[in-house]
Image (cartoon, rainbow, N blue to C red; front, side):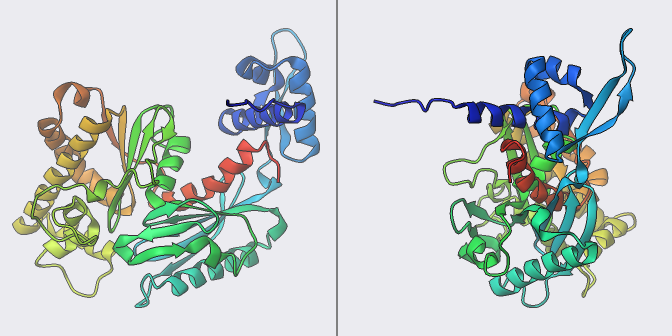
Length: 395
């Protein structure tokens, strides 16, 4: 027999705090009257909970607006300076660490290209810890006011005590990243796949806002995706859902970094695009190389043909997403996705129309992300932010 846990007064209070914090965070500034209208809480509950949140320093006044024939109504908002959030992007070519206030305004950041050590686990851990120390030092931020550190990584994250990462493309096998980072910081840690952190950022603040069913695609050195189903990220049985880059595009095709053949990533990822470009200048970073490819396509038929072929591959991959998930929106992000998107997306959409089922294609918008090339860092910072809002602002 299953027994349902009885809700206590403390549970109800925390739920009310969470509901009001969330609504103020995403929709504020708002008056107490608007909060009551939008959340369905009574005027007494609104008054009590807002009083607590103001006393705790989580909510502050944000001016006033005229009311219909009565006294002006005081507007309320989240106090951006109440605490700090840290976002970390362990990318394919760099480690970026940024410190944000609660409004997700970036206060300081460090950006370390990955050296010849590559994704050596100890090297990456040290870069994260060094970056964390640097942003706290540069801002003078009190570590006791940091609500948590979110980390986006290339790989599958096994949630639990050690936050284990399985990153096949970077040769990370069962890496206990959480435990390793805790040797250098006692701050709360949250770790997830980088494409999923990008997806959460775009859904909360960018091109996905308002959608219930969406796919946010990350195109960088490799390719990944975050699938949103009925407003919630779909994770699958082992948190590996969304590995769009490792769907098979061509049986027996190019060798992918994961070891398989014919993966979408082996054709659309920045690393693969540059490998397929015979005239790629040596010694350039991936960002510089991709910029050179786009520039060369204006005068070089071979470079132009490579981009046209890539657009068709991308369109076929988008069609797979449409046929599998029937999303309202597909959002293309990641530094490489945003770089190639303006040139390739129109042709990719034409290809998607050819490969996808016609009716679901007509119901799907395909667009570029709005949060720029550092959206994974922002998304990583939303991991501790989500915990903060869910808990009603509890430490």
